Image (cartoon, rainbow, N blue to C red; front, side, top):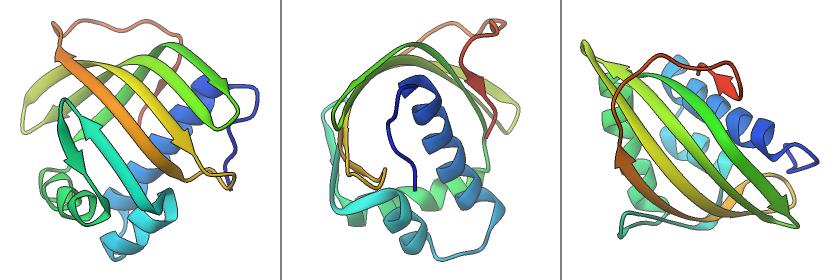
Length: 138
């Protein structure tokens, strides 16, 4: 599985890219996909909204329905032990609408690379062209 290793930027991009690809490019049960990338006790808090495993699985339904294209532009990422902190911009396009969301991410990961906990604060930013560093297209 994935480990934080010495490149937290690459780890974060690979984590979200693989998770999104598995959701959008397969018909596999969403619960199995969520479990492959998250521990059973996962808790994500995004802008004050708490998602546990069941809510995270439910959240995959609109993602699969809308089939967005996503790209991450990581600006800063640092890891120590099982913790990762990052600031990135998530570029999304769906149904002809482009969005850019700046994310401040603080997470903890299990030794096998699955996410255990995440706290995120987000804000919409103007949609612009992108730079070269830290990008991936899921």
